[in-house]
Amino acid sequence: MTTQASAFSVAVPSVAPPFRRLRNPFLVRAQAEPSDKSVEIMRKFSEQYARKSGTYFCVDKGVTSVVIKGLADHKDTLGAPLCPCRHYDDKAAEVAQGFWNCPCVPMRERKECHCMLFLTPDNDFAGNEQTITLDEIQESTANM
Amino acid sequence: MTWDGNPAKKLGQNEQRKEFWDWAIGRVRIPSSAKQIFRHPNTPHPSTFSLPTMAFSVSASASASASASFYSERSSRFAPSAASSANQFSLQFPSRTRLLPIINPRAPASSRPRFLPLVQAKKQTYNSFDDLLANSEKPVLVDFYATWCGPCQFMVPILNEVSTRLRDKIQVVKIDTEKYPSIADKYRIEALPTFIMFKDGEPYDRFEGALTADQLIERIEAGFQVKQ
Image (tube, rainbow over all chains, first blue to last red):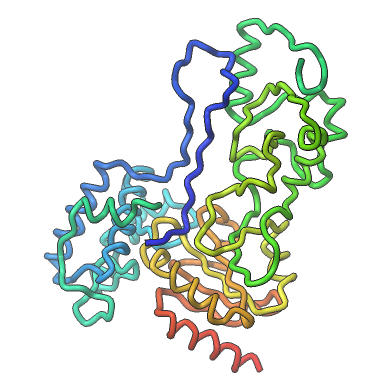
């Protein structure tokens, strides 16, 4: 799946930094990847919630993978899986408020998931699976 | 010998530490006398840089690409002879940094893509988003997205197709709302992806959510009709 994200990295310079005691290669990557543990937690949550709510994943599992990673990323940085498909003024306040914590209120009340994570069977993009493996997630998001 | 021609100073331990942290956080020591020569009139002080500012990915049909940025202008001024002559300057700051606007004199900015090429978008730097909108003759379709938003990633190949099919009719621009939250706030973006169509700098249509290529083209062309 093609992607819009680019990975930033600052390479270690060929001139050794003067502070020789630190042997750490100072490779700084922008916070682009959520931790494996969070991804696994959100994957299990997605499967379980899809089963419970009678919804299905998207035909294109790439979309599901990206959303699961987005939830994992918010869980890592904010402590709660805030909906990744929204723009927020103040993320911490939104987490505290709780409306957009997955599963968000629109999903809980009306089964409306604009992230295309949980799709009702009548949706054009709905597949017929309620499971997704970690491998599928890693493969679909490998080029991000 | 340092880049300004002075013999390299032998630094004490504390000075070495300061030097190292200055480098690590992106602050570079330039003697004040040099600042007048190398400071481009519009750039803020290097210590305030965090991310490269105002770089949008633009899917444009026409035009030469990337090098028209003020970074390359700075680089050409900063190390004028490095490019043209074989002199090797010994630098006190890292030779390969991508986030810092301090230039690498060994590789002039124009010959090396600053970012990985993003699908088929051409990257251009504008002084502001408003600048981009004002300078465009065609209507502009702006896609507000986020890295980890599933439907936004789903739209990437669709936007490419639409951009190709409507090559002469619109220009497609993508804005990462995490990198440019102020722009997203200005247009009150909530759900992602949000598409806004601009003409002469003013928005005239706005819709949210993922669509197929045909639906998107239909919506864009409907917008043209209403405009007339």
